Image (cartoon, helix red, strand yellow):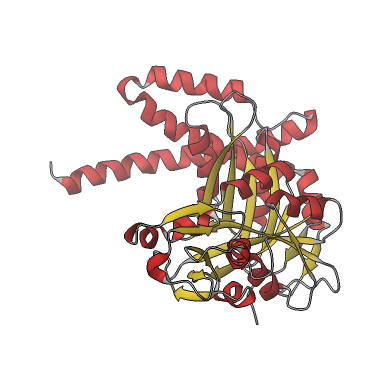
Length: 381
């Protein structure tokens, strides 16, 4: 027997399986109708686990493999039931009643925009690119930006969340988890770092370099090659301001060219980041949900049950709907139990019926589920 014979045998088996799977889905539709009439939730975890345990016992050495197939079948059946029942009513209502914005750029009139740092910070560059005509209000810490939005002092806040070199800004994700504000836009800023010092300083005399930990990480090769000592500072522009006000000529700051000009520093070296296309992603946070009609990205927070394969099954639901995850970040829940929440970015639009059905189904099934927003990458004009 050669490979073509074996494939033919598989095809024959599939021909028997397909009608049975279709029949199973039709029965799942009837189950949904029964659950509607009797007000029964779609998910019955105990029954599903009981079925999977029996499958594992019956299939012997193939138990785990066949259980995986059965799990996917159950997930598909539940997705169908959710679609029929129209679950996730709270989430549907929130999304359907959200303000719709047809423009890439969010307009806020005279409302202030909150961002972390001081004049010349990369956050300011991002903020002015997104909101060129708006007032910028600076805050010392990331959480101060969230609080400004929370207290109504600013309608929107600008927060850096990840960098193409240094990775995630974990503090930002922890604050997203804490406040659960909406994400209404994002902006990718190409970041070029400069080594800057007082006008009288010489490169060969520089010993200590001040900057935000992310910037130090993004320039780690340069710092190591020239045997410099990186010292953490609250912000790149704040580091530039500190160097400007210092009496020492043996210290420098890693900051933007704009910050160097702002604080009268001399640029000793340009473009010192590890990679040339160094990019930082900023998000726009808001207490009000605003959805771009042409939105392409969805942000979520969710939990997964403490059972084998639970995260795999949740992620499989996105694949089943044809959605691509571009970001998955796990952050610990501060409860001493090693519980985790997951932040996810997904390419999709809530105007798509299948996407909406999936989000609503997960909002009903998962213990923790927060829809953070559906938005567009905002472009500067």
